[in-house]
Length: 612
Ligand SMILES: Cc1cc2nc3c(=O)[nH]c(=O)nc-3n(C[C@H](O)[C@H](O)[C@H](O)COP(=O)(O)OP(=O)(O)OC[C@H]3O[C@@H](n4cnc5c(N)ncnc54)[C@H](O)[C@@H]3O)c2cc1C
Image (tube, rainbow, N blue to C red):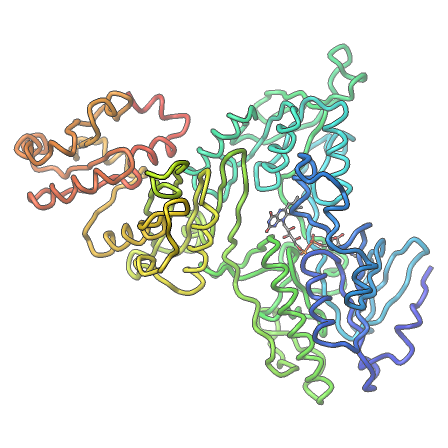
């Protein structure tokens, strides 16, 4: 049944050419959509603003859902940041939940909405699409088994929490991205035996492998079993007699034929944009993600898009990719609302009218409104996650993205304390920073540690956005007192390392160069103490503590026999000192970036085989 919303046709706003207040429709009532709606109201008090949300709730805290499952957020109501009633009172928004947009007619400027009462048609002067994404469903037989859940909505979180609190004892989480790990942590904290299956070679695939290993170790410490580098192949009912039929348990069979028993399976293997209905109406998309210009304009006239369902140009590599994070979605909601209002003002002033899509949206028609809107900035993908006692965070490009983009980069590693080592409670963190070897531009940074990682990655994200190069980090004036940091902050240390590298004060070798360092072409010199050396070293290494090096240079010269010297220590500090001693004595030398700490994490499970 079709039913016209009569309020949309009376008067008709500027869609009819009259100068009556416009009607703005927003599809999707959470991060991007609600930010857009709220900003539209602040920019235009007279407009009719209708938010259409297919679910039961708007403005809910998706990011809080895992912590509702764990119980850290106790009440469902705490997840509901706003309600239709509060949004009507505060912002005069017409928020309609249980309203799913199932059709779009861009020529007529109307959408078809499925409601509990039937189908409705609603006209718009401008439309903002913020439909987000849904959990991707890989072709795994058995995925529709009732024990398989996702974690995207309040209802998902309610179901997972009640399963975890009721009979579930064993959970298998498919996918070790942010949501998968948050789900795993939450279920483990509730006492379930949790296994995580990840197709990529390591957990948190965007994280560099030498940091991901630290996260994997933390998961194991929490009692989570990891199955990395393998896919789930099938979900089967557990055969009767082994608990099947009674407990509702399943077997998750992996591609290598291992089987995991579960009474709860969390599907977190990625996402798919919720855009099919709009793409069918002519919206330009790439693999389902909406193409937008710098102001959120799509290829369709007066149709804008924000959030997880859109494609962005990466802030470092320029690669076109979806960035599914709350900050960028909220920011885009604000900026795109500004662009929409400006475009509408342009239309009313007799501007170019329809077809006002921008350059990156596929066409290049004229911009309608005055340029009163800031362009949506290209995201850096700055992200953070808690895993047990550790924090993992990242900003900018990782090695894989830089390789895809064909960018040259140098990598520095450092393992500083979260605050002054002499003040109680300092925790070691592990930072990896990629920079342009010619210009020093910071290309990406990642960190893992128990304290202070959030602050350093946010600083590095700020530096990237501000165009501060890596040596320029030394110049940042940072607040310091022993409980908070160090006079030489971890970020300052990154600046020192980068400056040394770019000026040739230091030369690095990296875990990737291990075969070279272990070859006969090099003298491998470990400058840790004999006790540290005995605790695990590369079999080819010669041990001379850095404090003895100055007195034993003749010995080094004899051992090197004209070959370069690859120096290493525990963290990279002592080997840098040794490197400078060797260079001054005329040696060709390089120091291991991040030292044994980085090498061990890089080797991961192989460390036991490689080190003696
Ligand atoms: C469990 C979880 C944890 C997260 N944690 C973090 C975090 O810690 N940090 C972070 O930065 N990001 C996090 N995110 C990601 C963040 O929530 C998203 O990036 C952000 O919500 C995207 O906003 P959006 O408006 O594009 O989409 P959403 O917030 O997903 O909203 C889209 C809405 O559109 C509705 N909709 C879809 N199609 C239609 C239709 N046809 N008609 C009507 N309504 C429709 C959907 O029901 C949905 O409510 C998390 C996400 C999840 C699921």
